[in-house]
Image 1 (cartoon, rainbow, N blue to C red):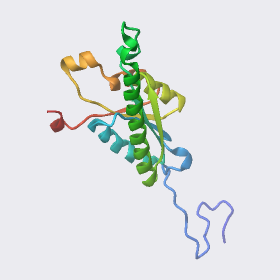
Image 2 (image 1 turned 180 degrees about the horizontal axis):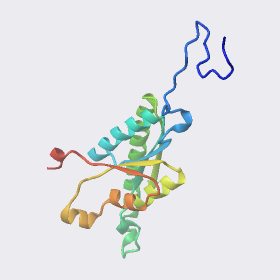
Image 3 (image 1 turned 30 degrees about the horizontal axis):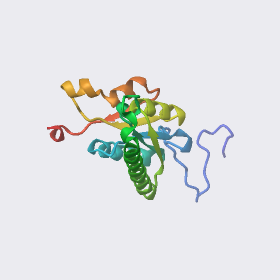
Image 4 (image 1 turned 45 degrees about the vertical axis):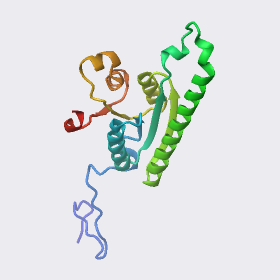
Amino acid sequence: MTHDTDPNPSLPENAEPKVCPPDAPDEHDRMYERILLPIDFSEHSKSAISYARRIALNNKSTLYLLHVFQVPDYIVMPYPRHGENSAEVEAQLSAAERVAAEDLDELKLGLNEQGINAESILRVGYPFEEIVQIANYYHVDLIVIGSHGRSGIARLLLGSTAERVVEHASCPVLVVKRPRHQME
């Protein structure tokens, strides 16, 4: 005889109880739905790509690949004799942008083949500003960025894009450093 208040009601003989751990993630519980991966095609970027790929696979994330093409200031500034080589400079910039777009698309296709929803974005500007703007525009949950590991005068003169992104981004930033043995 069973009572309606029985805490352990009997199950049919062929029924298997469904056990779901309390912390089991579901489709709506993904930690990182949108990940931004700024890349400059350096060795440091390759390490960041590896981390971002694993995070994207584990979270079924969309991975935004961003390459920022920075035009040197002296090219766009109105210096005397600025126009003398402008056609040559424009041709070089156009060729460099084309190569960067091709490299981005190749990386995107490779990630798509691995089951990652990847999008490629090519921007012209200052890297840290473009990274933060794109992160805000796409409402990314995480930025994965490589660090060059510069120190001393090189860091002082060149600055650190990763450091600036950490300072200005409105989402978490994972900075991927190269292993120490590769820095020397």
